[in-house]
Image: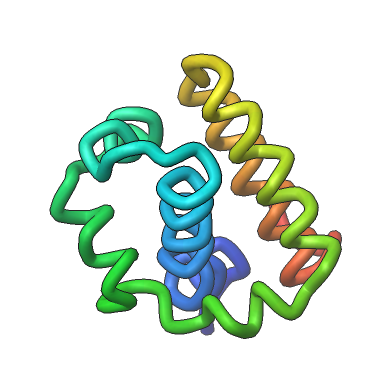
Length: 105
């Protein structure tokens, strides 16, 4: 039996990270290294997101207007300031609830 957090991580987390990386690269013209630093990950991970090696559910998420709006708000926040680990956690829990429903977390 998969619990909700496992399902979110397995199917959606990489796709959301890929969307965030692409938005930071395209909207704010950042380098992969700058994006990696803001997302607290590595440049090779960003490269994988851009080449769609990771994040197979991108199209599904991009078709969800509510989720995309929330991701865009997070990207703007991420661009404008250094976010804490707690802020990252809160964002991903909110996105999980939008995708899988309020029964999560």
